[in-house]
Length: 264
Image (tube, rainbow, N blue to C red; front, side, top):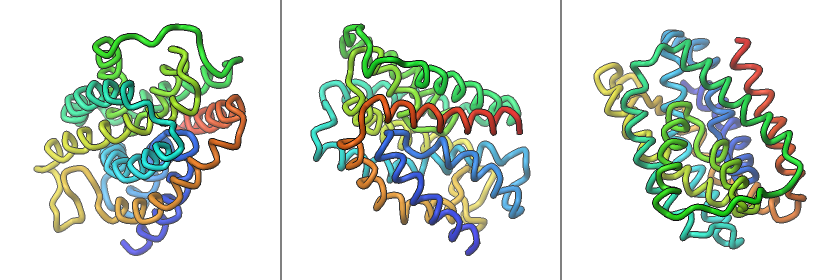
């Protein structure tokens, strides 16, 4: 357990910085790492590792995304009128899908993770402009879109940024504000998604084993202890980097993770 905490302290520092910089909530890094760590230390059976990794990732995003949102709010990067509609829709989709996720085959779940991230990576790398030209839809329609994206994010344990940043860019929201909104959506996805995984896993794992539902508490503790401090550093850096540079970094990161998940 001490080794797990030590490793996840380092992991938390990395994902916190990336959450602030890219608005991704850290799940894109946390899930693959925990997928290797949990069976490697005989904490869970290999066939259960993906569900536990996703649930633990979502729980960590509650803290990481909150820290990131506070930092982006100070920089004026969170348009709350847009973010509120997104958060409402994302919360509804995240809770429903998280509650049903344990019925999906672990192999299928991992493949879905890899394919979704690959599509996102190719879109970000192929982008030639900072924002799209479509008009942002009204609050009701935006909430419906967000419910679908929130459900996918909850299913994959990846927070909001990987899905919401490209969507908001498409609807003419500039990169920095898209990252701020995505971080806000991450709070809703993580909170309601985690609740769904707790309810679904309550009968499978016990608190005495270090679990609350499907959430593994020692790994969660390690991640959140450092991520909350490094997220503001990443958020600050978004003010200094060119917008397209941020998109390229985001795309390369997603591409590497997708390859690892699909080929493993």
